[in-house]
Amino acid sequence: MPNRAVIKVIQNRHFLTTTPEKSASAVAAHMQDHHDGAVLVVAPDSGKVLGICTERDLVFKVLATGRDPHATTVGEIMTGEPRCIGPETPFGHALHLMHDGGFRHVPVVLPDGRPIGVLSSRDAVGIEAVNFFKELDQREVLTEIL
Image (cartoon, rainbow, N blue to C red; front, side, top):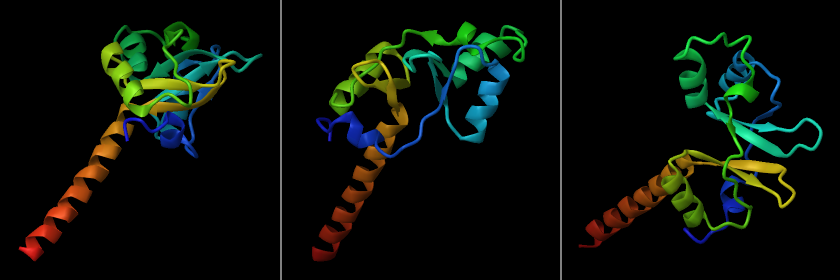
C-alpha cells in the first residue's frame, strides 16, 4: 500500500476550495457544512493553489488572537505556498512528507498547480484500520482451524 499512487487514495472524494478574499467565518461555516478540516485557497483567475486553511489556522490565528472572523480574510490566515504533491506520488512518500513537515493535510495538484484533492493524515488511519480488521479476521480463522 505505501507504493500505491496518492490518486488512488483520494479519487472520487470531494475537497473544498475558496478564494483569498472570503472571510474566516464564511470559510469556517463552509468547512462545518461539509465536515472537512481543511480548505484549499486558490487564485480566482487561474485556480492554482495559493494556500491552505485548516481548523488549526482558524483557531490559532483568529480565535486565539481575538481577531474578528467576519473581517479577517482567509488570505490573511492561510498557510501560504503549502507543500504540494502530484497525483502519482507514492502514498508512503506523502505520509513521510507530512510527518517530516509536521502537517496533517497536503494538496494534490496537477503539474499546472490546479488542485485535484487533499490527502489527510486520516487517510493513513483508515488504511491501518482496514489492515487491522483483516488481521483480526485472519486470526479468527486460524483460531477455528487450531
